[in-house]
Length: 317
Image (cartoon, rainbow, N blue to C red; front, top):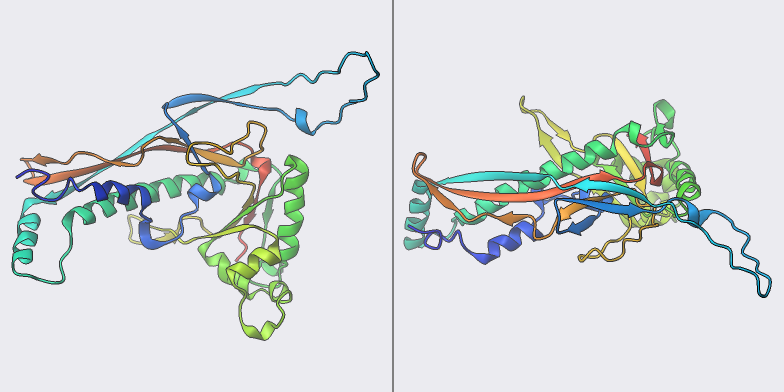
């Protein structure tokens, strides 16, 4: 039996790895840490200092020398970590599926797709957990953290519109860019949509909770991502990957070829992402377990670049 015989060499499967969405939910990692394609597992990315935001005496008399601005290049080295997972498929399952097809059983699963989607969910969730750990670390933001409690919580009498718009100004003054992204822990969305200050901006507060599209306008944020991903602990308890947090940040739009990233742009962060990843490994047969082993590999590393380009709200709901 070959990989082709059991439909593990289907080219569609590779596209599933690239285009699938694990858990069927919104994943925030690639939004907050946009993908920066790289062909190297270790590379240096030069970053400008604050020269572009300083004021200079640019007036020049005829015949006088033109004043010069010396740029201080601050090179940072980034690496790409490899993540991989194998999904064994017992040959008995493959044989039984083939028999079901011959019997024209309507409800059957494509085993190879199950393997790919399982691998995809594991690798994407691991990426999401790593990014969330970086983005919810208060130490990454310096003074750009607001802890909410009691009446200041957005699920209570808090003022999220005032909070978000006010902290957007903090980011703008530190970076020269207005934040364009707001990542909400899954439980924070309900708090925002039902908040009294938010509903006060609606034409009719009796219409029900605000929608995500209305929130974008009310909060003056172009992109709102509700991070729905969950993780199951060893004890079986399920928790939200992004916890009870909201992250406001400036995240540049980077093209698939890496275009759109300016060295002088104060990005909150990005993901160094090896080109062609994630990808499906060539399946092989393991005689010890009498299973076909289906592998997938994902080489990437989310990286915080500038904490002042973000603001963390903790415990808002």
